[in-house]
Structure formats: structure tokens, C-alpha cells
Length: 446
Image (cartoon, rainbow, N blue to C red; front, side):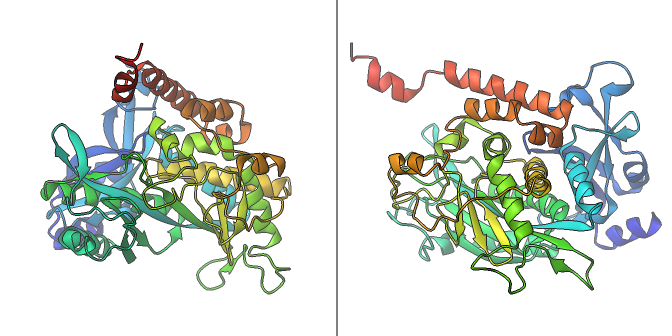
């Protein structure tokens, strides 16, 4: 414990941010003076359980208290907040791992892999918007970001150079290997890519990235937004997962998705084929977890945008380097293109593992690979080929989740019940809301 404190003190740290993640994927926590780190690491710091989204904990009794127990290996001094260090916490209730803590949910699925001698590597690619307030609404922070096809724009990218440079410097100091940044396909939209890591570390890193970007944007008078689709007729923000399954340790690591030359024209091994088949088979329920907001489904539709495409999947298919399919296969890995920027990374990863393991256990076949540009194929042909369409709204995804025993078991009984209850309320509120579009269309029509 003394070494832990001494290491952080030597970096100028005086306060720990004890951070956990709620059901919605939002960072929560407390400030803990470094001198009191012992309690944080051993028993955890206490929070009122019912004050946290998704716990379902009572207001009284021993189970009313939620404890965030710090994971020492995650402690990182924050360059963008001098004197502070973030430490990721696992949830405990009544002295036991809390079944509805998203980080504990992911740990359970990782343990299933560990028992087989396997571990999952993920590379998560967050897309996001930089916005500002103008006349009561949000607009791109850069008023000159106006190209009809803004991907890779090297005119607007430098105008956010200070924010992006400080973000990279800060993340690299925290151990995240940022290897590229680009302007994405919508006005005010960017993407940062990190080197892949084990599944739990990747989810922790994603939360750290969000914390850094929020602070650095706010310091510059901007809003960092991971809203899936803020603008009509422009692409939304995905959070694609690059996924591979491994056995062994650092010295004898072996990628189980690698074909090792016996490919028969495929990108993935037989095990990899079974894994993606499970992901495809459970895609409707996975939608609820990986695209968890009303707004998410304005991204997951086929339709033209100002740049010519949405880049978001709508059809349950896989294909070699096919960015129009739900699963894009590559040599020894695949890209899961369903998740959007609002997804809780712990829950999305846990559900993904459960779906993939189900595919392996049942030796499911993903069907033929799709080489077509699915955005160009008429819907009648899609149906004739037996290609399923992803849920087209949150309510449809929730219905699929309710009856999917594999995904519900991965999330656990408590979290599943809380998730469905909260998301049903979100859907009901959305259905009852009268939008500006409705007023403009109908107020004077009849």
C-alpha cells in the first residue's frame, strides 16, 4: 500500500477519483484524498445504492450501500487534471461482488473465457462530436466545418489541433497508445483509435478517454458529445469493436481466430466462424445493449446522408472487409459495427462474449459471406436472400432482449430487469413527446 501511495505522490497526486460506471455507461464517483487510499482499495468507498442508475438497491438495510472498490492497477495520474488520478472501481454490496455493476458483469464473462484458457482482445474505436450552443441548440463547434464530404478533412482538423493534441498527450501519459485521429463523415465529428488491449482494459480505457475528452472540451468552451446521431442527414457516431480471441500468455500467445494458412478463402478460423455466427444469431438482443437509446435507431437505418452513406449497419450479415455488413471480417479478427457511441463498453463487451460463446458451444454457422454493398441492394432482394434487418427502434430491440436467454443471462437478472425498466420508460417518454417536426408538419395542415 505504501508503494502505491508513494508512486502516485511522486507524480504530484494528492487526490484519487474513485470512478465507477453506471448502467448508462456514465462515469460516476467520489474524490478520495491519497492518504485514505487504503480504505478505497480494501473495502471501497460507500455510495447510496438507490442513487445510482440501474442498481435496483433498497433505501434501507445492509444492501442499501454500494461500495466502489478500487482496482490498484488502473490508477493513473491525469495530466489534464494535475494532482488527480483516476482509479476504476468494481461494485460491491454487502461484502460481495455486485451482480449489476457493469464492470462485474464483464468480469463474469471474462471468467468464462479464462476457464477455457482464452482471453478476448478488443480495439474500441470511439467516434464523437465537438459541439457548441447557438441560439438554444447545438451546432458543430467549428463554424467553418461545412464540406459535403468531410471525411479526412485536413482543413478543419487543424482548427481542433490544440484539443486533439492535448487529448493524445494526456491519453498517452495514461498508457493508451493512440495511433491515429481523423475527421469523420459528419460536421464536427472525429475519431480516435487506440491500440487493442484485453477486454477489461479496453473498457476501462474507453471510460478514461471519455473523462479526458469531456474536461478538455469544456475547458475550450465546447461540448464533447457521444450522442449517436445529433444531426439529420448526417452520419452518426459508431463505436466499432475490433475483436480477436487468444489462448496462452505473453510468451506463447496464439490467436484462435487465425486460420494459420488453412483458410479455404475465409478470414477466420472455424472457431472464429462459430463466434461471429453467435453474434449474428443474437444481434437483435445485442442491439438493445450496443445501441441503447432512442436516438441510436436514427443511426441504424439505411438512408442517404450529405456524404453519400451512413456507414451504420442495418442488416444482419457478415463479409470480408465489408463495411456495409454488421460484422466485417478481417484476417484473424472481426469488426463489430453495431455499437454506437452511447453504448456502455462493459455491458456491450459482456453481451458480445456471451453471444460468441453460444455460437461456439452450439457450433453455429454464420452462413455465406456477403460481398455486396448492402446499402445498394433493394430491400426486396435483402428479404429474398433471408438477410434479417436489425431492430428499427428501441422498443423492438427491447422486445428481442426480453426473450434472449443468452444475453439476459450475461447481464444478470438484476441488471436486465433494471435495464428494461429504464429503457421502457425512455421509450414511453419519447413516444409521448411532440417534436418540432410534428408541429411544423401538422399544426396548420388540417
